[in-house]
Image (cartoon, rainbow, N blue to C red):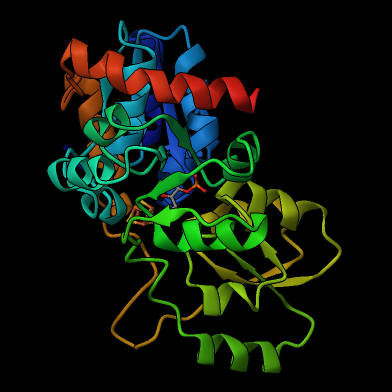
Length: 310
Ligand code: 13P
Ligand code: SF4
């Protein structure tokens, strides 16, 4: 890319020329967040993708999110700046192994976190996100047997909160398991007025110390309305950009990882850059393509989720 190009200007031009919409997740780098038409958590992004009239959906997020957009709105062209932007949670549930697991429990229904592939969605009864998981689970009879996949931390958190005994698939997110509780607690000691807020993909030992737990949108909204002036934020660092923008007078401290070489940036989310975003809009590549039968099978449990979340 010509270094003299102002990518912000060029992206805006391409948006108009191609009737494109940029949907971005909060874990994207700040520049991408600043050019997005809509920023949100997985649920908000799926809802926006379903209802947009734009011809091209430029998905600044990870593959399962762009795939969900294509499943919900198949006549639109969906592009992702880097096809390698995957997700460790989605990787932790390979379709063959999951199919066998499901077959071993035929009397269970399958509730699956949206962080999974279209194949896994097609094997599921209802999809959920961190923003609506409680509502989805509570919509089911108390004695309903449930398989919950792929995040064992989110599943354990919901089991505890709702008193259920869902059978958990053993998957996890590499970013949310990296935090050091010891370092978080010493930060809290040094900043006694700071509240600890966490994403439910974090481990139970950390969640036990959190003042508030929620999806990225819920965490952001909490910091907007809550009276505290400082927060220790246990999720991916990208969200801090919006928190700081919305509450410039407040202090946001990223929860520290367990060793100095680690970081709590999602290596998949951060594969997308402003330059790749510009290129993918210009060349309309790489594009998300999907087999129609798979799409229809994966759409059913997403539609059930959207129905219950309305
Ligand atoms: P949210 O739906 O809360 O934005 O979470 C998405 C995600 O990938 C968390 O790691
Ligand atoms: Fe997946 Fe974790 Fe990255 Fe979210 S933060 S996209 S769950 S690897």
